[in-house]
Image 1 (cartoon, helix red, strand yellow):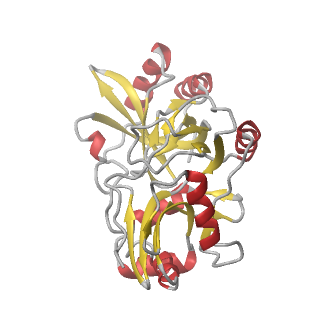
Image 2: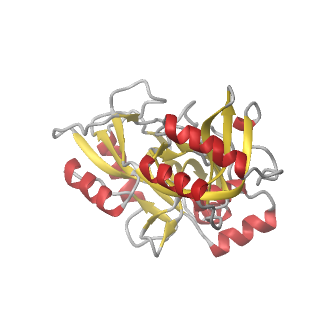
Amino acid sequence: MSKPVLPREPFGPISRDDIPKGDEWGYQLKWDGVRALAIVDDGEVELYSKKLLRKDATYPEIVRTLRRLKGTFLLDGEIVYFDPVEQRPVFQKVLQRERTRTAAALARSSEEQPVCYVLFDLLHIGRDDIRYRSYSDRLAALREAFPPGGDSALLVTDLFSDGETLWNWVEAHRWEGIVSKRLSAPYREGKNHQDAFKKRVIQRYDVTAVGVTIREGRAASLVTVYDGAYFGRVSLGLNGRSRSALDAYAAAHRAEAMPFRALPADLKRETVAWLARPFKLSVTGLEVTPDGLLRHPKLADPPALERFLAAALESPGPTQR
């Protein structure tokens, strides 16, 4: 029996602002986790990232689950931490696992905050490579191989026929977005296709500004932290007034040291005024990258930032944390 062969690059949906319509389309939730492909061959398991790096040690609970499977499979899906309180995936929890390095810490995390593997495609089953078959056929085979009521660590994602209704639900419940898939399409590698599209909900985060980047002697962006980790820089939404106010605030509340153990890579060529008095603000963005940075960040409420800076410069108060 031949062992399944990984794609050179996993199939990827293309960003699009609208939702394609028609009977040839099906719609799925966009799960907020990390992409993973798994080769399962009668107890032998190889778990790979989107970049085809081995991830067996990072997600031991998923490997243990897959080892119990009988047969041969090549699976495609998303590793997700589902928050029982929020009732939705929380990407930051998976990101924490990705950043964990020691075996003891990984084992502890897998016990205390176990993840699940959400399956959305099947490329190989038994002796057969089926990636040439239509998505509807591959999904049917996936559902037959992994029926509901099995291991809770494995879940086959649902397929919906009404994209607009699914999108409205996603917006109301603060999920990441939806993926539209052409039901007749084979599994194509990469993004050179017109067979799958993703639409993301604009996400909002309450972050902490811990520094101000300075270019040509003027405030250029805010350095932000979320959930204790570097979250990137935000400049969209800043105007002349807020930049001048940030210059004054940074000069009045400059810290001697940065709040990170190591300088984030994208700040190494920047001049940064670290803040002795960090402050809260809200930002929006499309998604959090695998590196933990918010993509396309923007100030959610620029006037609120201006009001805070004006009040802080006029009458300094306690640091916001």
